[in-house]
Length: 211
Image (tube, rainbow, N blue to C red):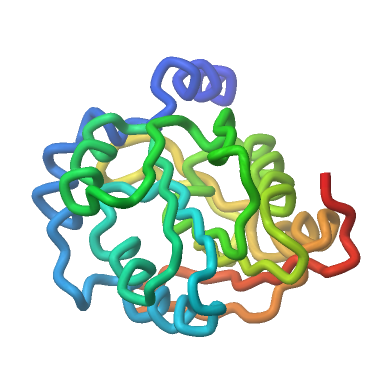
């Protein structure tokens, strides 16, 4: 019953509670300094991408501090978030960056493929089957040799999101590695930041068929 309830909630509120707490979020992390948690790790990842690479930021929020690191590296950035208030804030912060207000489960991803995909603080908000589906979509929208960076705890666990009060769930590193491998994405590196966020860097195999 709890899982069914969460599934119904995700259909009613694709932002997974973040639209409801948008004002609080934007007053905090939405105005994060350059040194905000995760900024250094994303900056280092972005610096390794080819000049002008096309990158999509899934669950971009206001764009601060994470998307800002992509923009600073002169990448061709696109962004998606399901919370209207977050998208409006993003447009104020980055008026020249294409951003879509839609859920990652239903997004058309600008009807294109990307050199890189970033998903910071998003996947664990989804139900397990939605997470597995999103991993498949990561592979679908990446070009051969394209790179992925996402965050989720390394242990299988369920917890209550501190801001929304809703359930979050990590499938665990073993399951993520297995799911990534099944769709042609090879994990290259894992590490943590100062906020104990766990990162997975993966690369799309060049011989994986393109849809």
